[in-house]
Length: 455
Image (tube, rainbow, N blue to C red):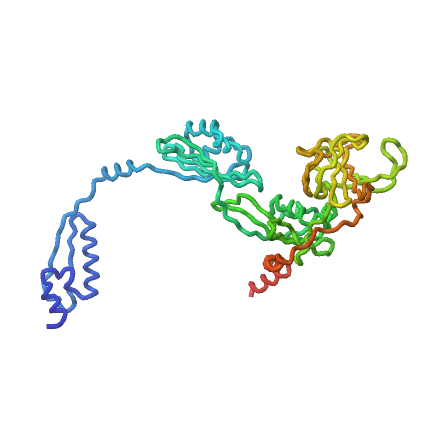
């Protein structure tokens, strides 16, 4: 007896499943499958090739299928839930937004309008993302979005949901965001902001670029063909850009001269921008107390606009519209703030050593600006006006050394101190990383990368 015959003999009562070779067993499984799926199907199991003379056994079994009514009832008992995501459009009302989210729930509408936290939904800016979950009746189960006031305040999650009893409740919590490092570059054709718009760079980043380089570059005099590269933070949640953060490094080519800057937090917890050799880019004084303005009258002899007499103009006049913010050009303490004859509303700031600055013709002072208050470079101290002896809105700015006026456009002032030697090793690692990123952004490197990719 061959091994196969012996196997069949031992399993003669079950040869449908086991009394076959490998090929026959596959056929038997298929036959059994059709037997289960049919009402009265017949399963036939062919014998192994070497046992064709054995009889074939037929198996017939009746299978009951579930009633169609029972299946429909089971489906109807299962409640459906829908999660939708929509972007806020300019001009959206609460009703229009909820309609797109599939919410048909008067209770939810009234709750959002009356609850102190939930009503933030009605103040969302365009392009913000809102997510909502509803049941198949359109009743709101939860709604979630994020709020970002500015870069100084934490991003918040606003969530509306139902508690165990089904009552709507709201929550305002700090959002957990994903931090990314972005790299971008641009070419100046008309202005910096036009170039950053073209490159898809947020205005917050553009303003920081100005802050990084404004003590070295006059952004009123950019030239066509100037270039810049920038590395900055961005923060995301669920694939949505929530906000941009700090500029980590930047380089700007202006009139053929390259300026570079990298952000670094020193051991003392003070952060600032430095050149790649560790020298602080912070100058003692800003070139202009106003952002993006024009000089209407320089430090020189001129005919006084009111008296008509020739006399020395002891400051620089910056023409600007009423209400334009005026910034302290350096760190210091307010020496005086009030009305001062022809100066109108005047603020005088005492800096270190024998330096002081004066800001005249203000329309009003900034909150908190009074004698003895400390101010930091770039802090808003007041707003452009036309008080005192003035024929139009402008800022009269004076730079004084030992109380003697000097031309702020030409006076030489010291830089801030460089990094301490203890910080240099860590700084060099940060600078090396940014140097590598800039190399990837430069046009010649991009061209080389594309050339290699085309091979």
